[in-house]
Amino acid sequence: MRYILSLSSTLLTQIRRLTSRWNCGYAHAVAKDSTEEKEGIQHKTERLFEEHGTAILRLSYSYLHNLTDAEDVLQDTLLQYMRSVPRFENAAHEKAWLLRVAINISKNKMKSKEKLDDIELDEGLLSDDEQDLKFVWEAVSSLTVIYREVLHLFYQEGYSTAQIARILDKKETTIRSLLHRAREKLKIVLQEDYDFAE
Image (cartoon, rainbow, N blue to C red; front, side, top):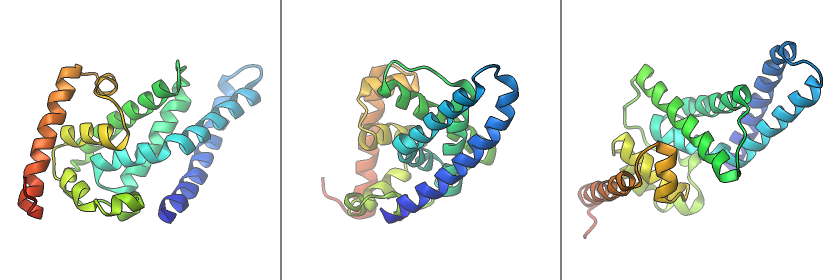
């Protein structure tokens, strides 16, 4: 967990630099009360980073298998927030919006760089409890993107199938089916690679 904390402070510094640079250009476009509005956006962005940064980083890492690219996705997601300044009904919608943006950016990055290599999960992203289950997440990383995506959102982020359906813009029955198939595929991988009995 120490790694995540140092990573967060480093990324937060980068995010603050980005918001400062962005605010310089933004000041010309905003009329009265621009300082107050800019500070509000910067404060909200830092709050989003603190509250959802790790979830966005883990989700993007599950797509890209590269910490540097995952950090880029996190920054791009927060920049997208600053550009659009969306309004949300509640915190759950806010997080869902951020994860949807992160998913889209990750998919675009995968397409542009063809990042489909299987690379081991970085131990720094795993909590102490997850360290014991590292082999499970390694098996998950061997699955295709759509299966990794639903498993991550369901097990790591704790979303229901209905919430995942909204985030991924799919029917809930499709999500249930994907989850079922992902579990079956994961069971096969674990039985083959780790000699798990049924």
